Image 1 (cartoon, rainbow over the protein chains, first blue to last red):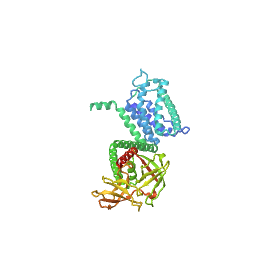
Image 2 (cartoon, chains in turn orange, green):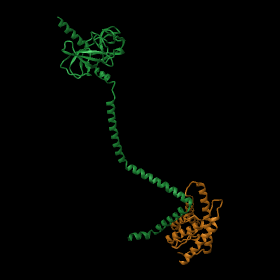
Image 3 (cartoon, rainbow over the protein chains, first blue to last red):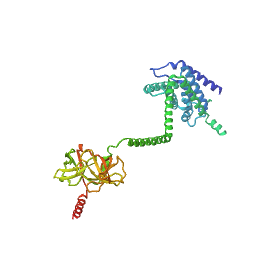
Image 4 (cartoon, rainbow over the protein chains, first blue to last red):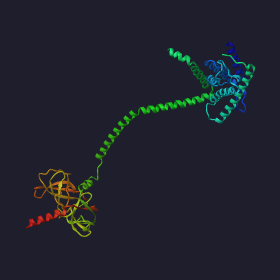
Length: 176
Length: 284
């Protein structure tokens, strides 16, 4: 359990640091800014307690906010995504999945994981940009920024899962 | 309490979610200028709308009181209006009162309008020619009046014209009375002043005052009762001392007579026939 905690902590630090030092400085075509720290929520298994997911998500979002000087923006989006994540994973997991199943290419299948990651990153990016703009005044710019940022975030999450899953595959995870 | 604890234990993630989101939004609106300004704008507008809705609700709730106040105010205004109307009626002189009274007296009587063609006031026996004759329905011994009072009696008629024997003629004797009493006399002209005439044969026991109204008595078929003649100007004694002779200020200004009306009473020919028969019988 401590090991799991430390692994998540390492992921948290790494994601926040990457966001702070690398991704915050990317503004592709002036619109797309990747927000891959949402990947932390993709790591939680099926039997993770909901309050722990909420706290991890909130903490990750808050740290990234302080790094990017947008207090509350990432925290609110990550908290909402963390609230939905267990429900989404439960809905997309196979019926015979183990209680401690962790989402991956191996457990959900390629398209299953892609859909899961797509929906979770979509929810996070959408709430993030809605809170960022807080209006639909420039709806076209908002749509472009959201779509491009979501695309980048989604691809980065799939890539990180590919790297993480490649090291651990094909064994089942047991965590939390 | 136990149920409450069970409820909290079961839905603690909901509460945690709400708390974390609330904290996040607090940070968002507190430390981000753009969101802060938008938040302030939204809050201000929302609060303003809430206050407006509250004010509307309060106004609606106090409509009963406002209605009562308006009703009370309306009553006061209506009372003031009625009082002002009474004051105006009391203070203002109704210059058309005599004419209206004349019109009331003439109700049920046909009036034949005519223009004065010739007129005189300087002679002892004056006559007036009017532009209405037999073709218009004018007959002898019909009464003639004007807008302000009595004029005279039709003396002769032609097809389109008539001669009127006015008050200002020594042969004119018209039965008149004092308004508000049953005392009557005969109105005659002394041939001096066209503004004044004498009302003779008022009994000594009669009670009247200067300024009392003199009107037709209606004791003939010529004039209906109540037609305004003039007002008592002075009181004197008759030559034999058995009655009063009243100086009457005539209401009709014969020097400026223009429009007159001939009174055609419905039963006048019948009454006149009876009177003639009676005179014939008495003469035998």
